Image (cartoon, rainbow, N blue to C red; front, side):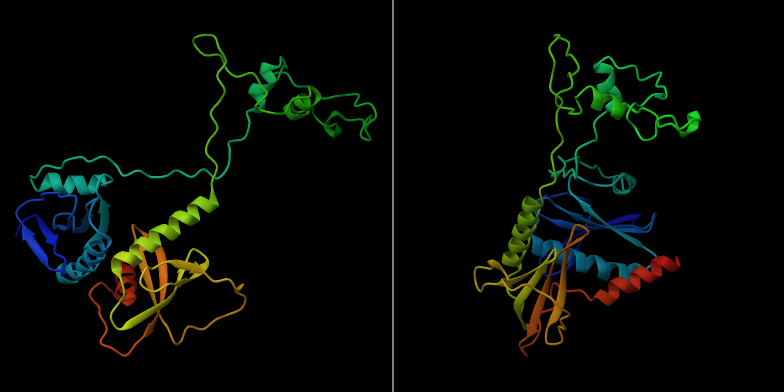
Length: 296
């Protein structure tokens, strides 16, 4: 048996053995490293959502075949882990680095201003701060012991100078001697984030189309409930404000996960026809593997 085995995932879910990892961007592969006891699902950057989901189920089946003591990992082209690269090197194959996928960086808030630097720019001596013994007009004036007197802080001294705004503080000079305005980090845009999530979910639904044996009536994205329009898979948010506890006994909930996160949850109504399980996995398999890993 080879130390590292390679399989290409076919659209019908078969594991086709390969002699080497040819690393095509429109394909999905299963790599089994028997030396480190790891199973990798490698997803090409141009592979479709449907093939990725089939690959996920195929990886689960392969783990059942080789044993639950094997760990699993998901590798995206251009963002492979070091352990995955080591497995490829151990097989004697050559790994070709690809450009990493573009990821949008969200910054929740701006960095706090550097008060000490602002004070130095205004000529305030911040190295020898002393207690204010007078504090005229203050209710704490003349309290006696030094330990009871409030200490003047950099913030207080800046306030007295009438300048607390980091934008108005002199910017550090550049090599040319001209001041350069400090760059501000991007702020988190919740509306843009939600729009991207909804667009991503809609694209997935379009590619998956309808599921035989079910009628897709609603989907949950983030904390919003959407109705799915027939044929064009447009998502329409429910107008009525939700309030209360709702049972979903008449529906079959189904999670759609991608790249380690839950993209959306479908609420499906069974139609009585034979159900298509081509892409689906049972959540019980995941919980079983999780418990096994804890025991290890």
